[in-house]
Length: 251
Image (cartoon, rainbow, N blue to C red; front, side, top):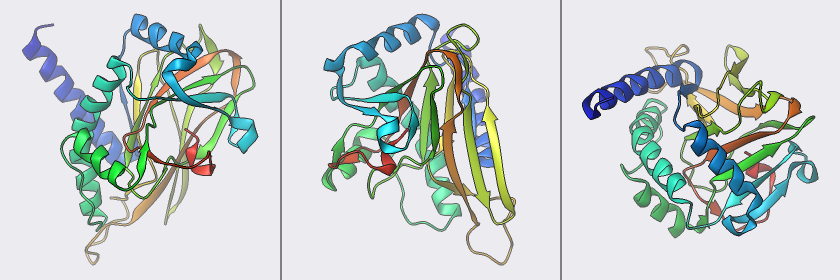
């Protein structure tokens, strides 16, 4: 695909993603990574030198399975992805905050936002890789880590469903004034899901008498893996404060 065609292709995908995020709080980006890249990244899980810490979920009542937080410097592919995705997501995050009547706005580039995090003591990298085996799952949660929170994050499925594992669906719940709702998001190997970290504007509940729209509370998790092994890459855009693992650090 020529460069111009490829740019137009991704512009269309992002337009659809923005509409899906507004409606559901999540959106799928197809084939962000190819199979070879997925396999290369999943293989990093065995290399402790690339990570700053390992979390066993059962020890913290996060579910079952484990994950590792990458250390800085990030692998080059992750570094490029984190910056490129942030650049696309910052305008959506800013629009959401304006709609919800929140004053916080995010700079156009990730480095400027990370400087804001680091100045507030949030200096630990949050990109991570998760590994689930048969019987493992991830409880519904939010990834907050500190006072500075970027309201969108990304998970990329590195394993092939139906081949490497069964079960293990990505699940989101939302709580609004009109009730609760659950959404199961189907992903293929290399697909990314973009989703709300903790809240999004509720355009359905909007009224003309309000200066801002109501908010929908969001949580995400992973259903039980029935067989095999499932690896996922998580890209969170705010860094974490210096603290031990807590209920806000599952992903």
